[in-house]
Length: 136
Image 1 (spheres, helix red, strand yellow):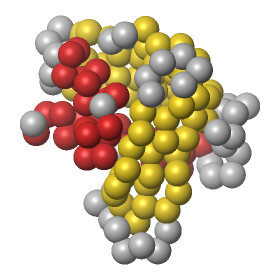
Image 2: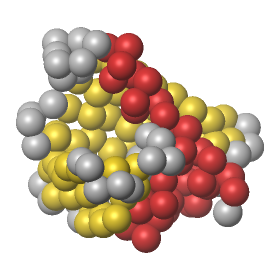
Image 3: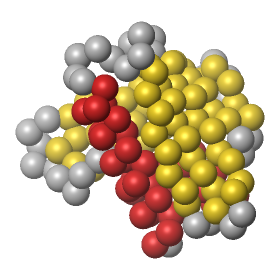
């Protein structure tokens, strides 16, 4: 199975980046790829063997899905590893780089869409996260 990596650098301190990534009241503001989508609900129990569930849906109500999984490993302000509900693994690393934080997400490809389509979708959400953090 292919693994895909997407990255961005956020102009903010690690505490802000970590909180905006992990707190439901922030997740709902950035966890979607385009302006036609939204994240109306987010539940996050950030502990090993605990679950998260984020609702992602089209603003026009035409489609939506729950993005869910279980955390494997949490190293505060450094690493989040989880398994999605379909068993695929995701690793997110947070690295200080001068006065910015690099966020790097590596995930198992799903085999339905091309790697490029998946990379583009995940990268768009990551860029939305960057835009949200930097605009606050």
